[in-house]
Amino acid sequence: MAIDAANTTTASQRRAGYRFNLTGWISLIVILTWALIAILAPYVTPHGISDIVDTDYFGPMSRQFPLGTDYLGRDMLSRILFGARYTVGISLAATLIACCIGVTLGMAAAVTGGWFDTALSRFIDALSSIPSKLFALVAVAGVGSSIPVLMLILGIIYTPGSYRFARALAVNVNTADFVTVARIRGEKLSYLIRAEILPNIIGPVLADVGLRFVFIVLLLSGLSFLGLGVQPPEADWGSLVRENIGGLPFGSPAVMAPSFAIASLTIAVNLLIDNLPQKIRDRSE
Amino acid sequence: MNLHLWSLLGGRLLVALLTLLIVSLVVFSATQILPGDVAEVLLGQAATPEAVAGLRTAMHLNDPAIVQYFRWLGGMLTGDLGISYANNRPIAELIAGRLTNSLELAAATALFSVPIALALGITSAMLRGSLYDRSVTMATITVISVPEFMIATAGVLIFAVWLKWLPALSFARDVHSFGEMLRIYAMPVFTLSFVISAQMIRMSRAAVVEALNTPYVEMAQLKGASRTRVVLRHALPNALGPIVNAVALSLSYLLGGVIIVETIFNYPGIAKLMVDAVATRDLPLIQSCAMIFCVVYLLLITTADGIAILSNPKLR
Image 1 (tube, chains in turn red, orange):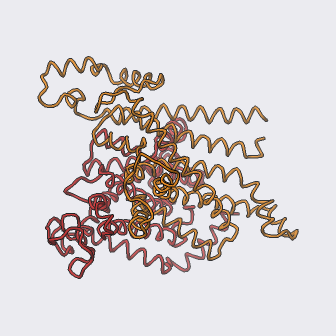
Image 2 (cartoon, each protein chain N blue to C red):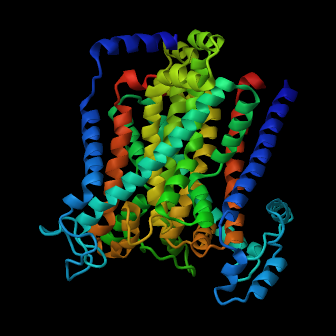
């Protein structure tokens, strides 16, 4: 019955096309704005990111420095705009790593079945029973913290979630007749997952990619906040909070502004996924 | 039937133990793939090759990795956690007091947040679709989407800087009165509660909503029972299993939150110890802390699983 209901909604939505509500549009605009800022960072910053432009430190908001100045008297707005590059860039790369590995392995496991599926699923379950922050701490302790390493660590930490999600969807599709036909035709594993499974799960998988991006942004910010993520002189949004935490007793805008940047991005992605057209996310629940 | 139940529970326990073994392998190998040599790091750049070789032999670093792993695992199982690189003290000694501190913080948070979160979750499920429900849902999504340190800094800004009710980012260890203790614990407990309550509200709401969608609830409504009676007498007893399950799962989010909260408030707990150990690359200490965290986490997850099995009337 649930499947019937899903089919009818899909059918009615297909006629309406991709319809988007207001919240969805606003979220999309926020996300695109941050993406543009990340790409154009050096051209949109009003001041140099390492220039000490104010004689005072932890300066308040003013016309010249809209978000105040940091603990050395550098312009906070410029530092946040440039920080977008690290936060968005590293998280995006890590999300791609996690989802490419996770989704491919998940589909392969569902299609192959047997001991390969069992062994891989058991191992992945064990990996996902290490809390993500703890996993990151152990990995950073082991291999240190540079930007490529961070991308890889964050990607590996969120591979299990992506694997489980894709596998659960692929197991359903795998029982469909057209997959059986393709299998009888003698198609190879790579063809099966690319041409038969993937097109049928791509919508929910993309919604899941968005959620995983949010988790990764939060974990990266948390790590940087602990001083174990992006290392000075480079600074993502988490590092910006850390280096300006001394301004907290003065109520300096330099402490809260980067947090608000993180929140605007993560909430926008969450809301976008919640308001995606039914057609895309109908099986994501 | 009862035998079936016990075999299910036993199976869960076995899976947990197997998982722990794989986790220990991952933790050990993640901290051993460092290209540098521990002996060289410990002795510094000025060390003579003979001294480095001597230390390597003394620390059994020449053995194959698998032998080192089993020696380490054996030590863990017999309570010998090794010696800290940073200050040469036995790790068990370093950890003992810190662990108690962290458990106190966790217990205080659970006592404070579980009743509030359950009340919010159950009432918002009862009033599904209302303005109250929508604002609770929106608030939980917001809390889940922002980093923990933002909740902590916002809390400090409001309660310590603007209202001046609470001390800010310091954690005094000498406590003289109950009131003083309350003031000191307030910020960390408050922040952690926020983080785990959001999860708990979502999960308990979902559990009650599911129970309210069943045919017997519809029957009770048709019978003319009041809304309160339907929820309290018909839906809630059946949702109790999933709710307790949700509580146990949400408490596992404490582990992630506690790492940030102990660092930001300078709380002398085991998570702060571990973060400091990562900064100084004190590998044996990191391994021990990581294993303790994983054991606690698995304990909570397995308890949640067990409760889900026990509360399923079909299995009784």
